[in-house]
Image (cartoon, rainbow, N blue to C red; front, side):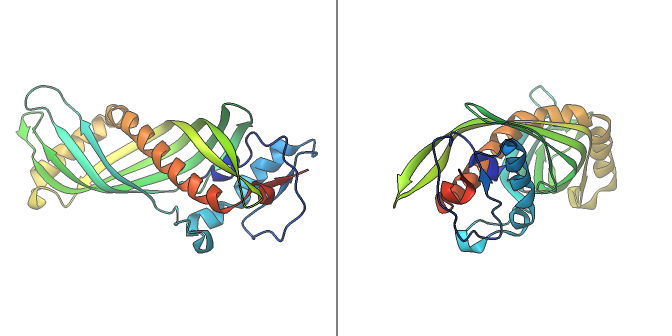
Length: 244
């Protein structure tokens, strides 16, 4: 979500347009500006409050929290390996970003950083954890700090009603975090022993749990980013975003 505006800055070097009465969430750039890349970065920073609260007039939902549907994690191996399924995943902090690098072209690339993110979800688990049967359900949470992401992708343009519109055709997301802490609560019918055993495992193996989560998380985030980006870009013509 934090990078929706940059998708509207790709492959536009042949497009020029007259000034418009722009909506407040749009910061318009000019291709003739020698610092046009910095302008696009400013445009991304400018739209952050609207990304957080949503833009009803173009049917863009709020990005705080950022909602994912589900993830399935295999945390230990073997026939009784410990597995966690997460659903109703809410990710907080995605709109509090700083853009650290922007490269236009094909593919485009954006790097950004977020100081902290928080994840909450409902979970079910199955299998044996250490030596304890640990099948159950409850609330799952994670706290991440020093989060960075790189988005790479491609976009195309089309014309409709005399205006030009962008569409994100492909998007890959790479996520990293400096530190992460996982935990559960309201689990195993409030069985304190099982809850503490699970939290001990998650605390001691946080980076391993994150590594198990990342492949699916990258795909899910890219999928949702593309969906929301294209919803925005279908409503906001290129001429609002950049002119000569």
